[in-house]
Image (cartoon, rainbow, N blue to C red; front, side, top):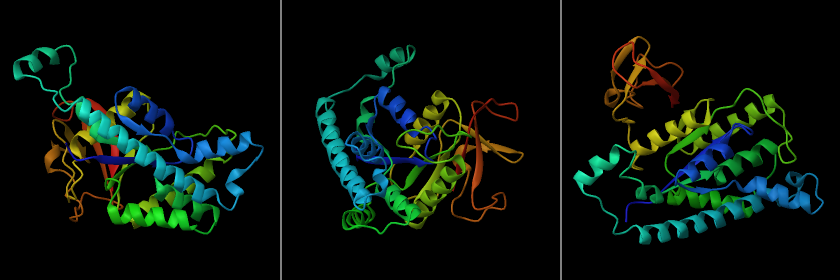
Length: 278
């Protein structure tokens, strides 16, 4: 069975993580819902207007995240059993590719996409000024020690506005500050941030899927993208030669590379997406 890979989507509240997770689920990925929103909704239904003020809130979120991760692992095992003998010949694959067939479709079952993780809950505790409870502390220690999640985390960029809800009572400026706390926590624990900018849902999901196809879960000093070209400043070249992270690069500014992906070669290539790799 291929190695199980768990990726986290994080970022500012209201940035569209839940919408992206749902879109990726419809495309066949194993996804894990955000825990905090569901806990807030459940407690509000019980009459508690602001559950995030309760002393045990962050521990409750961490406990539900742990349970959902284990449940998702079981779904992965079930998926692997159903697709263990799945094969396709090269000739058949070439014919089917003309109608959109993707040979790696069953392999999606070996990837989990999580709407936040215990590190997000740690960021929440810090943002709220709450002490880290025993459950959250144990979960943060577990995921760090076991390297539960892949070292690249998708940071979903803000949309430029925020729609308040019963569970999301925060202003736009506050949401940006909250997102920055998340980035600081993930960077402190050694994660690389893959920024997914604002844009139509199909473009954002396509960017995430392209990244998933290149990230194999092994620690690496270079992010390699296949079958695309990039532009940094005025230079255009093969994606396999880009970044050189963390080797110093005179083209880099502010500790990150602004990478524009293109569908073709040369300065006239069509821009398909923009992402920032830290």
